[in-house]
Image (cartoon, rainbow, N blue to C red):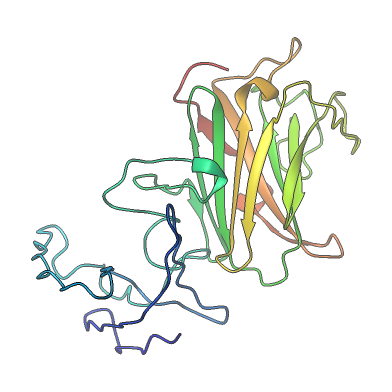
Length: 265
């Protein structure tokens, strides 16, 4: 299906098509493998054989007349099929990893972004949730590195893969998912223990079409007797090709900081 360009952000266009929807949750993705994708402002669903109701008038936002920012048009961020956050529905409450599908990151600002990457993070009493959009076409592997105890002298003490060091946990995955590992020694060696005592410590989804990785980690899996989970954590994403060559890493391989908002493990 093709969406014809309207020539700019200020000119609206429409597209009608028929699609079969399944009972329950359906996901409609709009994307372009080779460049920018369409800016979708409004979607209307009509059941065939029924008369359409008149479209409601949508009041103009006085803070943003005309809709999107000037010049935005079809220029979307990496990993996005439209100009919303991944899975965003303006009428829904934020839900993260609902039934293992894409998260609804409505209302969550990106913690970090550049031309190739965009990163979101959120937490609740049980999980920490991570999401990243990326622009790499040849991604095959990925890693989320977590500095969990707020101490750069424990875990992976070297400044690689993320400075200043102190990585305690790693989720390493491919296009089918990922596994959580613990750095049980405090040194610069690349040695990881995948024997995590917490049941189902991590879940992940990867889409190379939408160019999005989503990960959730149980808080209980990110603490032990020697290194309790801190309220202030650090993390970073690494993007890796089929030969294990690094395509990129977030924040120029500097740890991103996040303060947990929900108590509990």
